[in-house]
Image (cartoon, rainbow over all chains, first blue to last red; front, side, top):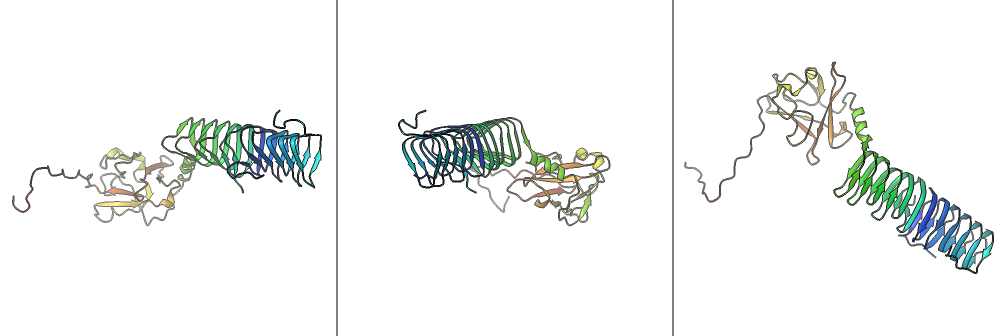
Length: 112
Length: 248
């Protein structure tokens, strides 16, 4: 899953606080504190830290998430570190990824 | 450093802080504090306080804006709020509503308070209009604080008479029809303006700002006393009439 160059990127040197919503693809490389819920693809980069719930149509985690992760498709890459519950229709956990939380694979992850 | 992009369709209620460049294509409700270049594209909207090193606006911003360097408003930009910036440029078709404070202009005033150390060849004396130096006249098109009429005796305040100024002046020694004082671009901070500072005992500093057309070199003409403003060019020959040369 790759993010197109025209999509959103929040760089490593940025700190974003609050609530991000809407229909967009987003790659997070910096620090985010708040609620992240987009109708699109979401990538939490290896250098990123997210403190709060994360929701997208598909969510790929390479960095750190302190909060629940939800999506129709959730991928936890080897560098991922998630402290929170994961809800997904399809879940991939690569070898090396760390997860501390509950996994629920029954419902539609993109719905709240 | 990679440029951050807040994408179109996304909406942030909160704040953005940090370093690096940021392009806003979506909606941000909250403050932005960025040590970098901020671009708000035509699809972008920001409601809140904005601080950035430099800023290009093509979309909409509502809120106070503080920019350390240049704030540029492109056509279609809409900015409602007070602005503090070193420089502001606004293209035709942009909308700016609010109090604007350009700190670059203040710096220009401050730096002109001292002596001018531009590489001038010699220094002269501003004398009374009856003497040979004449009055500093501005190009007729530019608006300036100096009177346009070269011969008006009240063009120079009393306290300025006798004050020295630094400029290359060639009219005093020899009867040249027009003397030119070349103001080097080095002396002015803003490229569009040259500032001549006239220190005098009565008032500590008197500055004359002369706007310089962008196309022409920075030159100010000091007309000699006998000079008159150039006459209008002769009227074009009327059509349908043959003009003969030679014989009357």
